[in-house]
Image: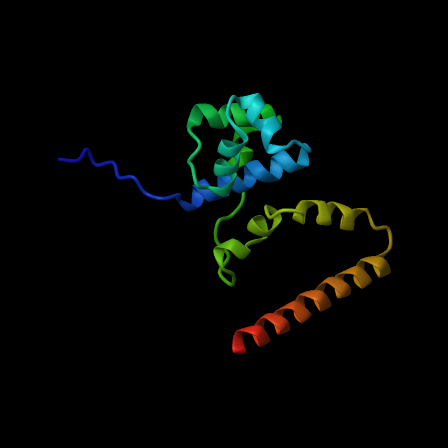
Length: 140
C-alpha cells in the first residue's frame, strides 16, 4: 500500500520558483557556480532548480533567499498563467531565458525614445524574418 505521496514532475509553482531564482541570481550577477557554492550544492543542482526539474525544499529555499539577499516570499512572486500565452511564453518565463535580462537592462539604459523604438523595430523585424524562414523550412 502506498502512503498517499506520489512522485510527480514539477508543478507550476516549482517552475515559477526556479524562474524567480534565476532572475534574482542574474540581477545579482552571480553564476550558477557562485550561487551553488553559497548554498552548498553543485552548479548542476542550481541549474535543475532554475529549470524546475528539481523541487527546492524549504530549508534550501531559505538558503537561496539569504544568498541572493531577497525576501523568501519574493521567490514565490509572479503569476504562473497568462490566458493568451503558452506557459513558457509568460513574461516571467521569457525573462528567465538566457540573455533576456541583460537585453532588458541594456534597453532600459537607452536614453532616447527614438533609439528604443528603432531597436524594438529591429528586433521585431528579425523575429518576423526568423519566423518566415522557419515556416518555409518546415514546408520543404
